[in-house]
Length: 125
Image (cartoon, rainbow, N blue to C red; front, side):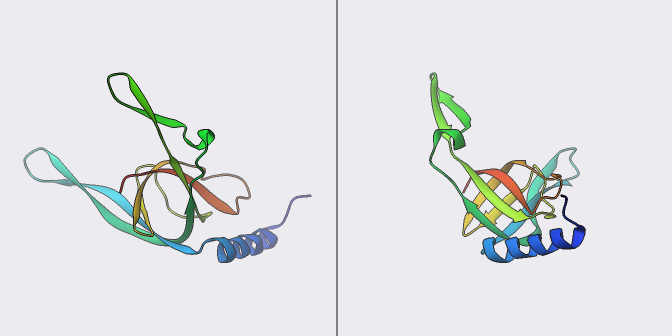
């Protein structure tokens, strides 16, 4: 039996209040024309949301690999960030949580009846 909009809103509120204990600053890439035909890019604050992040040191979570050279392959850990279901997050955004900067790899925005949004990220700082 499907839940109605009121029940869904209550569930979302409960989940956000209980699980999202950190603060996430969203940084969005902007391009500025410098007049010389070449633009420069910068990241500007695009919003702040409650959030939670974690990683699991398992092979399944290390799905992206980088090849630093000479045929060496190393795994790169992906971080999971949970945000409110309607957070304005783009695939090119950076997220700053607890002093760590993460780059968005993918997001699951658009799921039917989602209680929270799950975003996979790579740590860059």
